[in-house]
Amino acid sequence: MDDIFKGARYLLQGLALLKTPGLRRYVAIPLIINSVLFSLLIYWLSSFASDAVESLVDKLPDLLSFLYWLIMPAFVFILFFLSAYVFNIFANFIAAPFNGLLAEKVESLRTGKSLSEPSSFRDFLKIVPHSLARELAKLKYYLPRVLALATLTLISVVISLIPIVGIIGPIIGLIASTAWFFWGAWMMTIQYMDYPMDNHQTNFEQLKGTVSQRRALSFGFGFSIVLTLSIPIINFVVMPAAVAGATLMWLEEHQ
Image 1 (cartoon, rainbow, N blue to C red):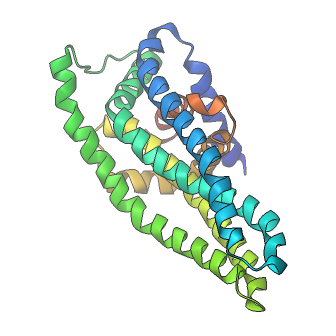
Image 2 (cartoon, rainbow, N blue to C red; image 1 turned 135 degrees about the vertical axis):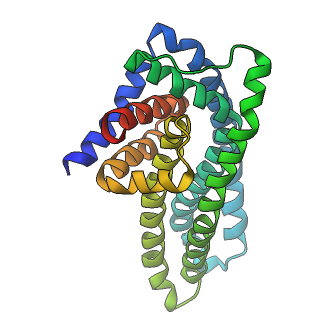
């Protein structure tokens, strides 16, 4: 239990670290990318969710129109999580090279050891292919499991609309929602621990093994990210804060 709270505190430490003068220019680009994409996500959800549910309810018989108030909250919840996952993949693809540099700088400030950094824009471009390849490796690990959870979620929605057996739909939905939450927390830790560990040439299999050694710590860190993503305005700074927090956790708990 202590490790769960300890993991969560690393996100707070990462957030506090963002105010360090030497980090500000490394934080700026991931922060801008995160803010813009998350704003677009919120706008899309607010305009799409209501129309989609109303369209679904319009197809139901009048006797079942009360389901609107049951479907709407569940639909918005599920849609938010699915969209947040897609958003996170897209945002990290774009910000990956910058997140790697931020992790390097956090480590350098913390340890006093100078790490190799791109000295020119041309040098920076050289690290982009590796960063994108690393994101693809995470996507390969991530996507099949997300599709399985999405299928389970869809099954729960469909069953909920079937008379008599529909009573078990919410139960399946609860199981799916819980699985989404735990999987999201696990993947957030994998995602952000990758940046400091990749800077030390740690391959993806070693990364998963390292994170698995302290599961409570890893879930605590991941839970804090998932929960913070649901807080307006604060969610804009989650990406750089998580990179900084993961780097601190790597240095103090795993290295």
